[in-house]
Structure formats: C-alpha cells, structure tokens
Image (cartoon, rainbow, N blue to C red; front, side, top):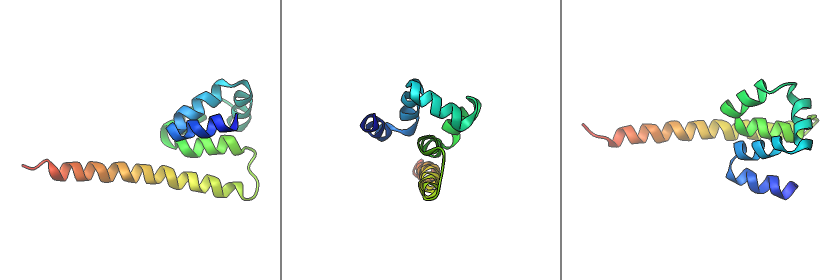
Length: 95
C-alpha cells in the first residue's frame, strides 16, 4: 500500500490522491481530515501537494508540520515555475 502511494506520487499528487480516495481506508481518513468533499476538491485544484500530504499525515502532531510546510513550498514552486515559463515564452514570440 505504501509503495503504491509512493509510486503514484511520482506521477503527481492529484493521481495519488484520487487512488487514495478510491481505497476504503483512504475514504475514511479523508472524511476524518476534511469533513466533506468540497475542501479536498478545492485543495486538489489549488494546493495538490499540501492536500495530499495533510491527508496522509492526519492527525498532525509535532514534526508533521515540517512535511506540510515542505508541501506548501512545493506547490508555490510549481506556481512560480509555471509563471516563469509563461514569461519566457512571451519573450521569445517576437514582434
């Protein structure tokens, strides 16, 4: 189970979260962590790594916040890389 989630996380947090959501044990943990489906869906759209890590580590104690902070940094880095890529593409278009 753990190796499956680790290999799916390499494909992306959204795919790994979807597979985790389809597993009955995962459904239980997600429902306990978020109390509904709106917040995890919104989290997958905006901050996918943070949502996935928070779900895996729920309930969060002590050094677990380090991993959540690292996931936030990964999400922000993905946004920054996308913006930088768009800026470079507009520079090379020319007149």
